[in-house]
Length: 250
Image (cartoon, rainbow, N blue to C red):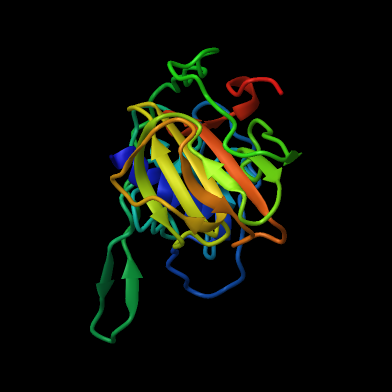
């Protein structure tokens, strides 16, 4: 369930690009470092989790998971974040104390314990599910590996046409609280596999409801989009994978 909460929250980060940050003035700055084993970055004034992630060629979901950051995803100037997976945890946020004159001071952040990076296991070539296309229509946007802005398929169609569950599972999110995704549905298929369906006009399922493969769960729409379309993602252990690697050819 923690993975599901993390996914939902980070989808929000990827959509609006604005996690909560303590701002102390000055212009926003983004990290331009190239990620490599053992590297970390110091949060600057105006940074967001999403900006740091995309500036270093990784996803906001990865950055949050590697550093043990959970909702509401607040990061702090001076905090150090790992840019690689491993056993270290994020540094503690700077603690603030108030002096006699009412000024605000920051204690130096605790440095993380470095650990050798452990490469993430690649997604399996096959999954335990017989995936189905979630809707009819032309694919107008494809998955691109390591691009946090292209984490699934965009399928164009007509408003109101059925959106179906790509595999059996349980609805773990059904709502419109994630900016940029419109009316969104997330289905958990097992402890490793999730699928997400965005921009629906209408949602036909509730959280906690079990759905079967091919069952209609929504209607295509343009909520959070410029045209009628479905944004569809498949995730393995929280990371997006190419849906075309698992969907049947058509």
